[in-house]
Length: 209
View (cartoon, rainbow, N blue to C red):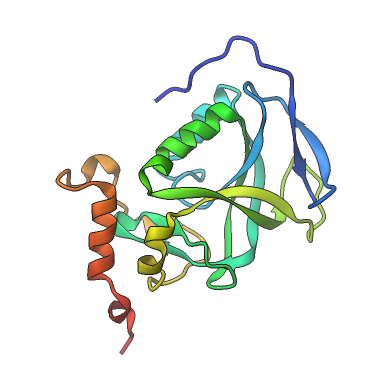
């Protein structure tokens, strides 16, 4: 779906890049300030099924690609039903997760919240710290820390998902069996699908013999 178009962009907002605290304040010329930083690790990344939303946002002046980075702390990144990725808010467990960093304005943020089902209890947007930013636009030291936000699995789902294998990055390998929303069974809500998956993929499902 196309993003709403604003005829005249508002004055630039600023976001902090390259350090926490006291990083360089870089102007983000986006249409609907204030701006924030969004870290995406799954289907919103370039080349994946939901990147259309961010691509449209960039085209409409509501988002800007910053670069690639990884989480400072380790987190479990797992795949649930339909190979949908979930980042779990269990710090110091799992791996340092790789993803893409975007500056987004309020219009883009609202659309991301809607896509991620924040109001439905699918995901929640939470702060996290990134490091190792690689960017063509911004010169950051390798050990710089960046405060951003990411979509974590809703707390009600975390315990059931945590026994799934942890991955460092969501790649084409994981999407080989990804099921698009339009192709999923319509007899259940997404939460029902997740909880059913949890019930049938308990810890014993991942014991290797």
